[in-house]
Amino acid sequence: MMTMLPCLLFLAGLPAVLAHVGGHCPPAGPVLPPPELSARLDLSKLDSQLDSIVRNASRSFNATENSFSILLTSRNATVYQYHHTAAVRDPSGVKKVDGDTVYRLCSVTKLFNVLTVLLNAGDLLDTCITKYVPELAGDQVYEGITLRMLSSQVSGLPRSGDAFDLASTDAKSWEDDGFPVPPKGDMPPCDVVGGEVCNRAQFFENLKSNQLIWLPGAKTAYSNQAYTLLGMAMQNITGKTFAQLLRDSVTTPLGMSLTGLNTPDNSRGIIPNGAGKVLWDQDMGNYNATAGLFSTPNELGKFVRGIMNHELLSAANTREWMRPASFAGSYSMSVGAPWEIFRVAHLTPDQRPIDIYTKSGSMPGWGTYVFFVPDYNVGGAIAVSGDDGDAASLALLDMVAATFVPAVDSLARQQAKAAYTGQYGASSNDNKPMNETAHLELVIDQGPGLKVKSWFNNGKSIIKAIADHKGVKPEGTDLRLYPIGENNRWQLSVETLKRRVDVARKPSDACSNWFQTDSMRWATLPVDEFDFEVTNGRVVGVRNLGLRANLSKIH
Image (cartoon, rainbow, N blue to C red; front, side, top):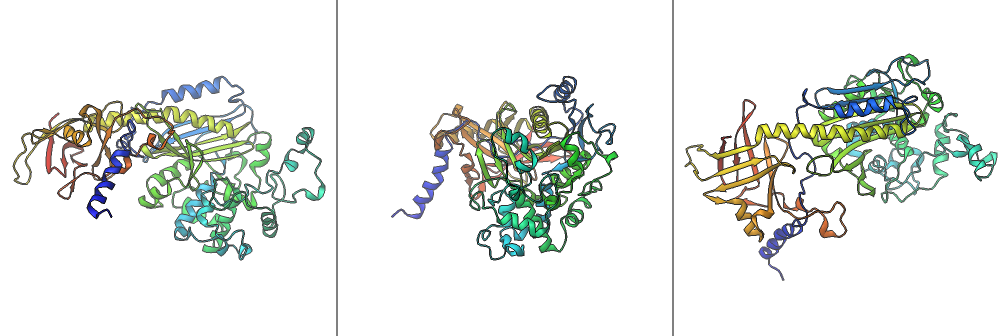
């Protein structure tokens, strides 16, 4: 039988072994303090790309029929806007698109829906939907489906019921391609795009006539009906309609007077031709809580800042919300509530994966994104009205990711270099003897965070000491500091550098450095925490808690 101490030593050693494989494996999230976005933010590449697609309309991006808006914001203010008014559009709408032009948000509505749940019933997320929707009470199919499953797209509910039934929306072309002529008695009577709205009884008759797509909690599958049920549950819980919850909990506190479920006057909106024109004033009925909202770029900017500044949810609850809930069958995408999270790499010099939290919205003639990049405390909105809004909005998101992220990363590096890099030497505090042989040098290189270039205490190299205890050479050991996020505290990460593959082919290929966090203590205090001293906005020193070393910045 293994005694307690050897067991603990074995467990303590395991992470170090697991973490040996992989080059730079920084912790998820910011690797440097989010930058202050100043006039030095260079978005000329984004301007150039947008100007190009507007001037050179093509099949891949039809700027002749696609009007669009892009808004980028920091926590403090909008930092960039670009608006394009398509030549071909409905003449009853705005003459020129700007930040106050109204767009349909489509499924971006789901983001607002979940927020009302978190604000009014966050403690009920793990209770069953059958408790709050009388029509489902006692139905074994829905027992076990929780509000959290509904909001996280793992409920297994059908996608949209009959809303986009092919026989109702585009029958002739499908029949020409071999589909049978449908029996009249099988045609959906309501809740079809462009048709009559189902009453509540009809909605549940349709819902119960279908089986679940997946078992509850088993797999990710996009569902609009899940959010309809979520809205119904919230009305039962709070006694308020979705419109009232939205107004009282979100839009009024954030000053979003133009955001709501009612169709605005045509003169306020950008209205496309074709199917998008029909859907401009379409009553979403049972689907209001999943796709019914209208808003403007400027008000979406307010919404994004409200989330980033924790104006509605606490900081801790916001961080908990902005997390994946399930995977989506790919290495680069996961799903939250209701986040569509893209994990992209190779955008920055350190090549690290960066998570872009988005919520998309689309229906014929419309495409929308609200997005956040938590690593840099930035976000924004993209809205398209036109020929193929869905594809166009995704193309614009690609452009923003490829230009905005590198620009803010460059600014973060510049500001961190000016503030933190240089040499630090021993100082005397609290009448304690000066450690004359303590020294630290921090640099910014192509990797993540602050690189510890050299580190001495009592005349000895701490980098060499750590490498020796790992059984590796000092030149193969990489020490980096990453911000904790409060009080100028930083966490040390120790890595043994090896080539890291982008896609793991075996378990040992994976980055496992998260096992090592807070793994070095000396007489109760962490050796892997560095606290910077800031006076009048300038870094003047740093303290390593475990080594009891106070170092003053000298360069």
